[in-house]
Image 1 (cartoon, helix red, strand yellow):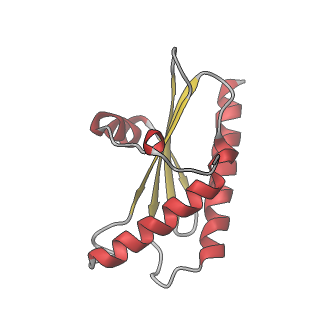
Image 2: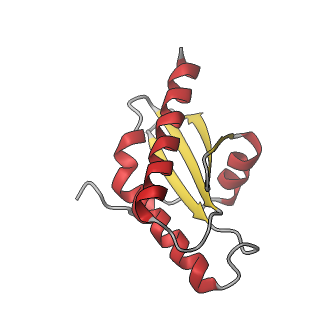
Image 3: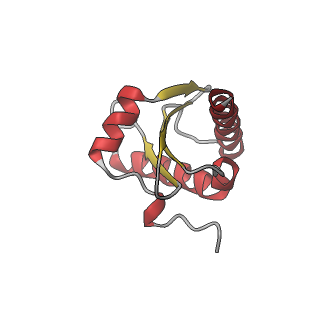
Length: 127
């Protein structure tokens, strides 16, 4: 049951989303953009994700929903990689803009590489 992607993992707050886009950092991979923001949380540690697919690239809603579903599944399986031990909150936005016949393994490797870069950047900023 650790691999669930419940409501507390979803980034829904408009103010937090705008903060991630304005103040957050960016990691670029081949077809994936990962934006993240680390903030100090006094009460709890919190990790929230949001997935997006651009409407200009994927005109049909069916295609956009499919891309977001695949991204959520990859994040759900691999979210344990970036769970922080400190009392900090991490907000992540994953954007896919590659070609549509998605190669799952290739996309998963890109996201895992992005998560590893994210972890190393967070650890370098703490030191």
